[in-house]
Length: 332
Image (tube, rainbow, N blue to C red; front, side, top):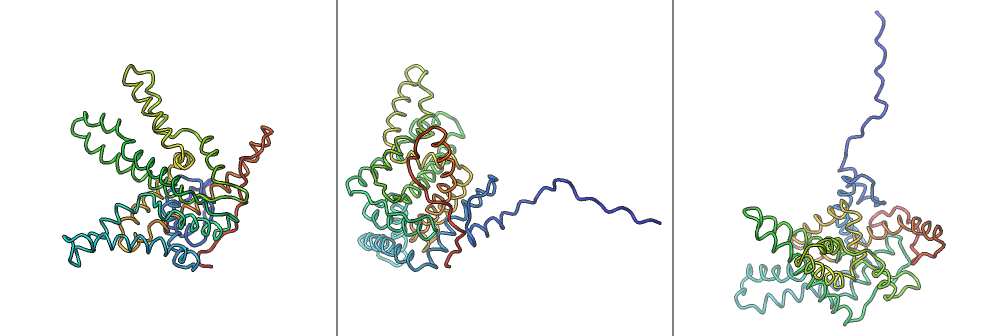
């Protein structure tokens, strides 16, 4: 009896999705984001993990992050000790994390200089340099912090008012929308804090880039209601006001909109960091390092496209982005 012919493999075998391999690769030997949305979500999820690994293995990054983390912890301890109601071990610990939970997601105006230096050190460590820290004036930082606070607080006001009239599911949808809105701004703030200056660049140049960036997605959504009678005009005016308030973060908001799956993973791991004791003391440095890596990769990937577009239109590129760096091994 003759042997049966060998079974031929399929012409286009479908590869099995292996998120653990994507996660391991993202941390062990960080590279550019993958193409598939599912892989990009895992990639984004692992960026704060990469930031933590880089932080604990690199002395320069650790020294740059200990000062702001120590000052934040000292302030939280003082706030906990000044509350007579919490004068017990458990009460002090609980009050400490309550104060920290309020302060951690908000822009740290007094520590902005330290975080700017940390972002530049992280960029140079990843090979995206040479870059300089983006240090703003104190009053400019105060103005930006106030605008962000107001925008985060009332940006969803039209949606929440409308959902209050929805029976049963309305309150649940409001809670979900507020949580997603808060995560969105935590990610936007992380990428805003990771900004750096390229050689020859000034802070005013970043303002020009923000002016050229598209309007935020929530502003465009509100402006679509302009044809509606009465209510549409109110929503359009509210959208114009939101656009003016959100102008400093146009680039970061556009980045979140352009890479939704990557940013969703980044937001989930960032939320987990905020809820993890001890690690949340280093929340901002860890997230800042991860954001610096993502920004460097995305800018390096976009540099050839910007140069090609500038050549096609006969213009010059607005900024110069460093070439893609070699693969970096954390702690090497």
